[in-house]
Image (cartoon, rainbow, N blue to C red; front, side, top):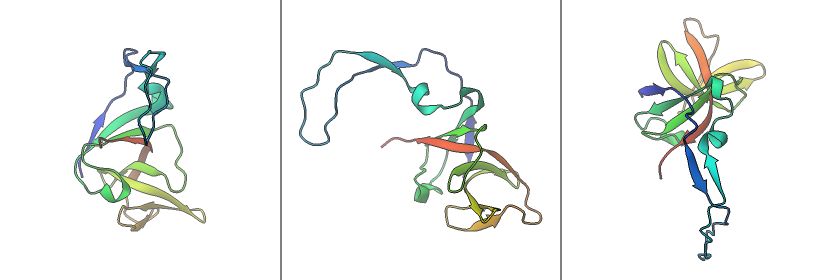
Length: 139
């Protein structure tokens, strides 16, 4: 599963019109098209700009956990992982997505196939890169 790393740099020009009307999931509601404000998606997607970057996924290996081909991961290198969070980790010189597990103080990396790899496994070379905070994908 190749992972393409992408930088993050807000250019301040990414403002999109934002309409403050409700969106009905049932019967259509007449929409007032007056633009009331603009929205900067960085404000909603990036919590810590100085420690955040993007990575694009290639392949369907992670579809079981909701990550699909061409999805973009938002990764925060400044956040500490907690149990159950997805992380980007360099594992034996390969970038991969794992689920961080803390079980009774022992750290594991869980794969999408529910395999648990102990962090202190002899010969395991790893570096936790960051916590995946959001996933962007098309529907």
